[in-house]
Image (cartoon, rainbow, N blue to C red):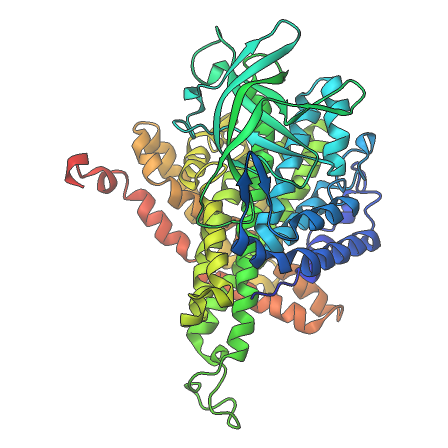
Amino acid sequence: MTTYQAPVRDVEFLLNDVFEMERYSNIAGFGEATPDLVKAILEEGAKFCEEVIHPLNAVGDREGCVLNDGVVTTPTGFADAYRRFAEGGWPALCADPEHGGQGLPLTIGVVLSEFIAGANMAFGMYSGLSRGAYEALAKHGTPEQKATYLPRLASGEWTGTMNLTEPHCGTDLGLMRTRAEPRGDGSYAITGTKIFISAGEHDLADNIVHLVLAKIPGGPDGIKGVSLFVVPKVLVADDGSLGARNAVSCGALEEKMGIHGNSTCVMNYDGATGWLVGGEHKGMRAMFTMMNAARLGVGIQGLAQSELAYQNALAYARDRRQGRALTGAKAPDQPADPIIVHPDIRRILMNIKAFNEGARALVLWSALREDVAERSADEDDRARAEDHMGLLMPVLKGVLTDTGFANAVAAQQVFGGHGYIRESGMEQIVRDARIAMIYEGANGIQALDLVGRKLPADGGRALRAFLAEVGAFLAEAGAEEAMAGYVVPLGSAVKDLQDAVGWLMKNGTANPDEAAAGSTDFMHMFGLVALAYMWAMMARKAQARLTNGDGDRAFLEAKLATGAYFMQRLLPETKAHLARIVSGAAPVMALDADAF
């Protein structure tokens, strides 16, 4: 059985010291988010996650969900925990006050989402997509749709889903067959089958708001002919009351490797009543609002599972006794030393710790940019923030989930054989973490999106802004002697990144295979540089506080040591990534398909 403690202290350091959240007080929602209020929210959220939903993590994995006559029953305790979650006002945290929300910054919601995913990833998925559904309808829905659905999504009374994938069609949505026939009264008859629908049917909420991609007959071929529809599980009367069951049902539950506590459904639409969202043949524009929120959420899941794995591996390494330290017994009064004395165990733990803390900073840095993009009154600030989110989204999703899974496996290794059996809980973390690399766009697609679309967008404007920001930091911090151990490695890694960009620009345009073959390496190189930038910022703040004699000395010194480890042991991987990128597509494409 695992344990979990939400990283409240680390979050407070990032929000208050590193990113100085109070500087955003001119943006809607931030004025009310005082440090005291944020602290209270974080502590209460942590308590709920640690005491209410984490104990259900193993229960959900063991019991799974049950489908009987179209009704899905969630694992023991899930329905009561969700009721307490909604009654506590957690779904409304960042929703617009106009819809009954609290209007707090999206950043606070992002923090809570890490706590929830770390405590119980499967449970968190029931409410996780509701935020994306809320945002999509808030931006693209009609006034009537907003009035009907947004208050109930904000309260948690109803939940939301995203219906894209079909049995024959995943990433290539232009191939979808689900159709929407106009009925002449403003509604459409939706017919088709969707698969892999997270929380598509369950017993936690009175209604489920499905956002469904479908094609209207006579529209353009391919992706240009896709439209988005809101299709409630239960039809809603004009006065907001629930009416008859819609013609949408769960045909099967997927038998999955992990996240057993979440109902992953095959959804059948048999002439279900739906309403157009965002205009005919404009479905992808509206759906991308939801997909971007989901991709950030999935990146956070990668971080959260890495954190859960780290906490439990650390506890085991402190407790498990095996052998003696090579430099002499550290616990001579005991028959053996705890395994944390061994350098290879330390290597595993330091790798994960350095990633987790850097990744958390990267998530919150980007979440603050998302708040600017969504809420700032300054058009130029919004545009710059949107550029940031577009550029970093594939990195956040791809790098955090690839590395999060690798870290879960590494943490399992700390347990030895005990990590392979169910009792420790580590094998569940590995199984649960694996899906994050796949859904909401498999990571290979994220890498292609980064190299093929995000880098060249608007003449490379977003990349130039990122490099300019890092360059300005290097110029300023480079004058500080104490920062040399962070600035010099970061500068070297930025040079590797620039060399990779130059090579891709020169060769990828002439032969797209050259860019595609190096795309995953580039995504991870970019991730390392972004994480190193986060560590340099954290180190600078920690060093300043130590110099001023302000704060918890042990905490701050640990930050500096962990950041130094990242710079010395993990960041040099940029050079290996660069070497693979410039080797080009030839080694990758050398074999004929028949030769494999």
